[in-house]
Amino acid sequence: MSQIPVSQNPKDVVDELLAAVHADDQPRIEQVFHPELAIHEPENLPYPGTYRGVAGFHAIKAKIGELAELGIEDWDAVQAGDRVLVTMTGVFTSKRSGRTVRMPMVELYSVRDGRISEIDVFYKDTAKMSVLLAELS
Image (tube, rainbow, N blue to C red; front, side):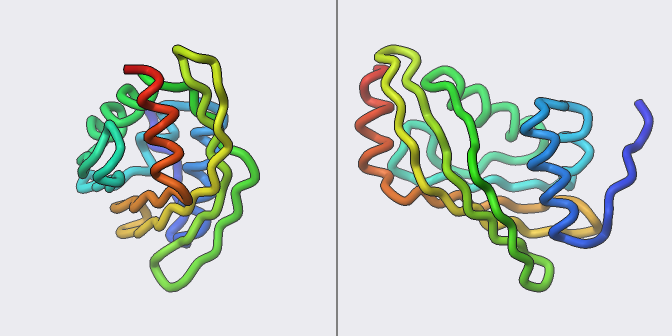
């Protein structure tokens, strides 16, 4: 597999990831991640904790995918140094009930060596998410 050029500008790196996720382009997604990637999910959801590396990304994606279909709407990215703040609306549709929750979210990205090294995920209302995800248990 050939290496896809990645910008050193943190916002460009995050924009590349979001475009790749939107297109479900796995090679592009994986090449944007730093080998020491850490993804931090809230502790009070069914998929809490820190996920590491590309394998961690695939693990969290699979865990969420077992529970709900996930879409992302209306994202905007703002850079501050080597960090990028992304606001978005997550659209979670329960695989069991079919009910959909639109959730404002913030993700804080850190970029190192031109790759995403850390993602910290914040949901506006984790209680509402817990109720939706409990429908699936």
